[in-house]
Image (tube, rainbow, N blue to C red; front, side):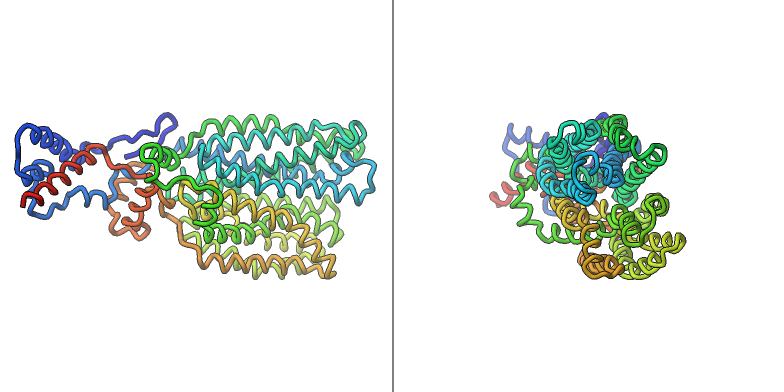
Length: 567
């Protein structure tokens, strides 16, 4: 059995010598003796296999390769899995912490870095700088995704975390426009570009790593924890800004108070880096890399951008649409609702924050539940519920908020949160399962970040423009319904991945007993297509035949060919 630990990832033999390994020993002896004196071909086979060559051999090496064995199954220790999950969740927390901090300080940022401009220009500048992050994300997703498939998930994720947190810290230390003039907004834009580039590799890499580590039967639950980190990070950042604004005067906030949340990124990053450096690369990636080193050209090698698009355009398109639908909902709740409540419904900022932050905490608490439900009932069913409620709940939600009462506004926000809980929670487990190991990081980086840049980051702008152009406060609801309907159609074409191994890899479980049970029941298990599973794993280089069996197989094949030649 292959057991994954923090110290070693070498295969560990469990359960004693396999019958075919004993056959391999016999084959080796047969090979030695055959070099000393001529021996009939049938004797070669009999010595190699222990059976009459003219009779059917149920334990032949070719049959062995068509079956799952305990040595094929990867067992991930609980401590290793906990470190992997913690190391990925902290990165998502840091990413969305910055989104929450910057989003809630947008007005102040405009005042500090473009102090000579009018308030309207300052707001446009601040929102434009926020959009710059999403312009750089696709490039980061492409470059870092390709590097992650070549160099490993762990090293690239360490880089993204350090880059994100470093840029956040430097923003907090930047002098304002009154101090360095023109260079203040220029440097802010450059830092946000760097931040967006590194963010492009964060979610794609984190979801790839945690899904490759997670046991097949619980992948939905563990992958959903990534989005728990996202919503907790946003809520923490937004809540911290609100607390500082409540404690300081507007003058103090503009002078130095706005810097506090950005500078606090340093100790938070220190904690995050500690967790992330404790995580090694996934067994699936290491196996694929070893296969490419041992037999270059035989395994499914890393693909460049053009090859990735050519070979997996359907998967990329499905991932793009699902991310667009889910993130339109997600960004509506996190970044657009405060604007909608204050500018369209004319509520105070304090009231808007008081209503939206508890909703984010509710979402964070419910996401693991829907992740676990997808493990039990399937990803497609849970995603279908998310897309369907996105179509059905939006009109009632905006109608409730239109009444402009605290209770009805809260209920409206809660209705928007329902599809987010079902939809967003299952992207991290569903999307990586569309791609094989060698192209998983790159495929995720390209599809996810393009969709977020086009639909997620622009969701507030699109919906605010729709309200301005039509004068209809219900316009955002129709936009969300449109994107959710696109997601609903895409879910119908999505292959079910719950409780199944990732493409190109063999099963991953959480205990040795589970590995034995899985092998014993492989013929009755509805979640295992054994022949396809083994074929894909051998093509991707994630299944290796024991050396003893390889040697025996060569001897047997040679003996049979000799037998046929003599006859």
